[in-house]
Length: 402
Image (cartoon, rainbow, N blue to C red):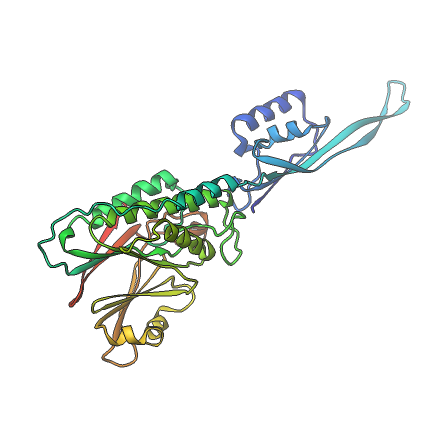
């Protein structure tokens, strides 16, 4: 968790200055709090309050001064100290007199309250007992269906705090459906006999309620983790229901470096919701690479953070040799970089076996870390791929945020 520290000056604060500080704290707490690396305290920040002055402060005074909502924070290590500062003064007759003045220090740690998700988990289990029914199919069936469509919207980072752009859950839902509608705009839906919806690849920004990635790197937003997980489950389930009106759906879950454990949990939640549905195939495991075969097409999915792109294609014929031998178009689709990068084709086992390796772009906005590290300027995009069952890759389409 981020730790916010602030120590007000030890100089004497007048009553008028004190009231002014309290007014600022109530209306603009960000002007009173001290920030680390330029970032404001998030919902999961520990606030270390430390004040010194001519009057003692209560816990309520410290909370008001530092902009802390006591309904969301617990108090730890409250301490109140007092000491005297003396000075030697001379009167008009030249007599010396020692004058003392008391000073006070008030300090404590404000720690975010732990959220009990038992009620939400109970509702989730109850919901899972009611599997989602297969929707009524729409479209014409007089055609020989020949194509599959992959909707690649990777590295969504649900729960991230965008530096400038709105990346709230409501905004994510809006952009998600705008992207799907755009990517399907020119797709002949009556010819689609399979959808592929790769999910994961840092779909969630953090991996636990402590605001850490899978590797333990603190990135904030820990208090949003469970809410983001439930939001992600609902969004993916809604999308699967929508797509399954036209054709069966394959959902590979790909672990990312941010959400490796959480995305497996997400996969299990979605699996439970669609249990018994023969038109839904969910590929969820702890493997860092997942493969899907459609006719002459073999598509591998990975995050792209563990194995360099030049080497990852060489793993395909070793990991799925039978599928590799039975296909003529092969590709590895990766995320992680947040911008499009294509190495096509990469020679694999021999000059006759070639594999496209594509880093798919991301719709996610930059945050403070990306800005400070100079990772800016990438186009915010999603991408789709269209495959013919016998002819391989037919084309690709992009959705780009303005």
